[in-house]
Length: 421
Image 1 (cartoon, rainbow, N blue to C red):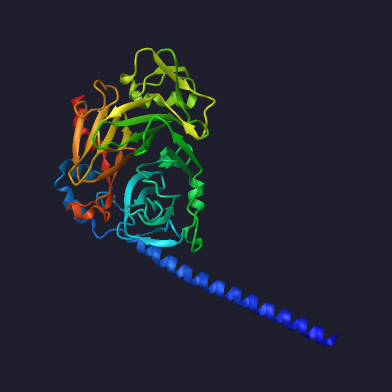
Image 2 (cartoon, helix red, strand yellow):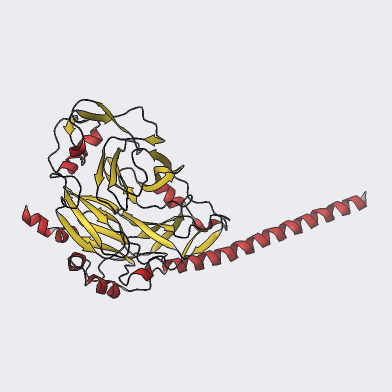
């Protein structure tokens, strides 16, 4: 009996020692991982090998851009944001799911809210998950690197301030799609919580009909504007309503003459599209940016029984080829156009005068930008522009690399158009 007690106590003691050993090993591994994670995060923050003066020297060949950049109140540092991860980024290896260093991250999209600037990027070698960078607008420091599911191109991002969520250009089953990430989900996500962390989970994903691919996107509340890039032919713009729950809805054709909008949230915003005063009635007749393409007698209104996983619209229009991004400012639509190592262009269209469609000839202004201009975004009277020329796949193709997100004063940039009116 005594021997049994001694043996039992010995077994318990051995189990306790083993358990302590396991816990100690785990703690050591965790500490070691945290050190590795911290060093990787610091490396990712070192985004560029160029300083602001070098970027300004590039802009000397683009005087209209340079003047609009210098016109900002923060002219001391020109309010530029170094693009993270150009020379080394942290993401997840798509095969192993483990944290890995990526040297091929290529920036695509840019958007902001009051506190943060978000940049999207994909791995050019398709070995790592695409990512979202979250930067502090005041300090310009990288706060988080956020791998998303899979390897979408992430050609566009847009922050929906009304619903506090980020829209992303994605794909679902090789079809055009748009996904959302709530700000709360972004704030809660921690990449360095585990050696094999999961990518962030989308809040929702909606397949989109009427476009071949979600090449870029932006918001014109209460619409999500999605575009398809075409290298050799005209591209496509499509508009999908965003309902009161922040979900993408459908715009269907019915009998009648124009768009009949009965949703109060929608009716109040249409004046921004047309540059006219909002009508008193909550139900109004109006046209969208592509109304000149529609046949007389066509009409559409919101489907209330839409499938939240799929959306379609009749509100589509053709645009010039090689479009990389779209943004809206007052009564204007701006398109960024680029492909290859040649100079990029910013095209300006007056939404109150769209006769002839969105072609190069009907543009009210064309401004030359450095090569490889990607998404553009409007924030108040500012235009933000991100470039992919600093990424490994493109930096050797041009000497005019832009490794910072530019901010430009729109009033200065569009001064000549305003004066001509």
